[in-house]
Length: 538
Image 1 (cartoon, rainbow, N blue to C red):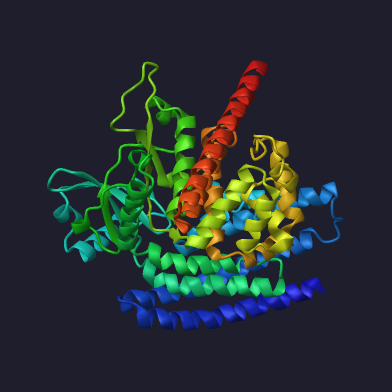
Image 2: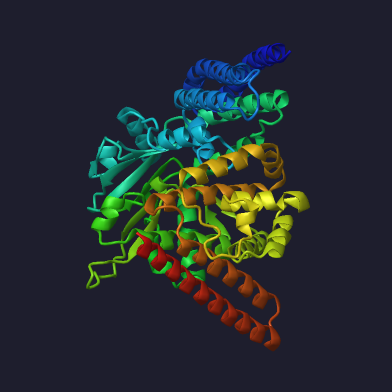
């Protein structure tokens, strides 16, 4: 019965793919600025659709038949399931690289969903999707530069390195020098990304919707919807440039205390278009490059604190959030105005790259999200439930939402100990989290259906930050959670003051501020004692 159902699903998927291929092809030719290239692409689209259908069907068959008859909870089923996960992840990885573009972007998203995607998929996608992105040839780069700026690279720039220093799913970056002698980074969009995008949207959407129809627990439609909305913005580099300017303005106006510690490369507007972005070149280390960070005299824990504070300020105070903070998009250098201390240490400056994907939190969402994190850090069960419900989780799934945010089971979330949100990073912790996700998979799927997409992006951002911090120190830092607690609490207090501008509200604000500082001071002392005890037991 299951075999016949799968066979029917596969046949329908292949037939629908063929039909959609013709429709997508016609739409591509009609809407393209380059009909000749579009016609060429239309010979590729059906092949990509066929690859999608075959890959999806193969993965589905593999799961159905490999696990057939194996009892739930048995050691043999667990072993076989791990092997099927690995095969499925490799097949999906191959599909993403063969089709490229938006597929790689989807693979990067999947690599951040620790709470929903099996560990094998997370590991393989993280290892490959950020480091093995395809390159455009220099002839293709020259074509883009000439079309966008009106001349060949060696005419527009004094020097232009034909070998890219980095490549991502949508573009690659070349080092160049302007005629005025400034060293710049030139981000060049992969050719004809806009032509393939429409067909890719339709292709991926068809596959995901068909699989969801026959396998209801497989529901990634929200992810496709998010990519459909975000990719057009990411393909317009002028939007990215404006986002970087707005981000820095927010830090200067709303977070002046750390404004000097956060930086975005200056944009050369006269050398930038929607498909080509010229920026100040940054001499800095990637955020997970421990060797060079330490060579600068910067302590990794200082970077963890700065990353945590930077994104806490964006989420809880600015409401304008960089939603793609993986390691390749975060650089670190010594703060230009700082000098080495007598111990040789220097303060870090965080450099934010790739400003294409931002999300704005409306006032209520921002304050509710800040209130939720405040409650999580302080183990306030009532506050957690109240704000989870406000954000859409409902009375029945609030504990699951809190668990996804913190990657901890409910009993740990409400544990009053100061280190209750810290995942130590051991094999047993990883197994606990994977078992937790597997056990509640249908509920997680329902939760993701309920939550606003902007909150889903915040979940992805949290996962990225968790991975970045984990690459700098062994497991999450206690200090980073205290920073989140402080910034989220400040945002909540400031919102209370802004709503009621009276002497009584002003007095209440400063009383609450005093109590907050006292509580944070006590938690810092507790953290110091924990670290001392750990050091003495080594």
